[in-house]
Length: 196
Image (cartoon, rainbow, N blue to C red; front, side, top):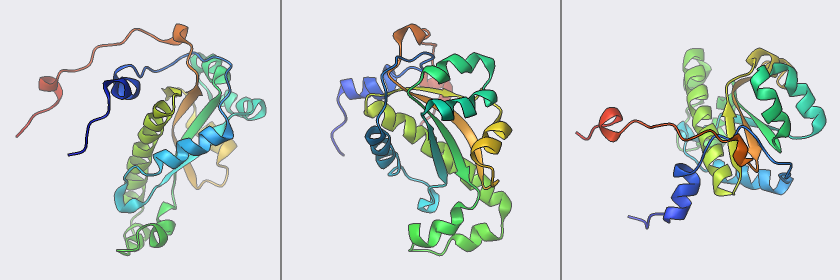
């Protein structure tokens, strides 16, 4: 067994990792966003399919394009965040399988089964969205994931070819402590898990 991470690292990733609803004006560089992707891409997905697609909405012009799709309560925090990531999935992710998973020809499984394609694409892209948040926290960024938006409007604006679908949005940046709500309770092990 490998050595566990330090308590400080575990705090940053999990115990002290809050959902931020406010951000400072500190920017996030292209280099940091690339480093973020270069970490999250290593998280496992079925057949190494990597169906997630990420649009980092950072410029004022791009934020204005996103704004009409946001629920009113999410506008201020999204406009303040250094970047907002649209986490989506590629409905033709399986076209990359011959390159991404050479040990087995999994592409035909998805070619003939649209329901399997959607199920696997959404599931694994959602996993990749979680890896994104952990990677962001590991790099010292704060996260504000949200579902309060109109997916059809996001897709019409950012994915007009219809190939990509939106799962959730996540604000990134330097979180403003004033925008953190008190920690809510979590279920105990006995409420949510069992050892057989």
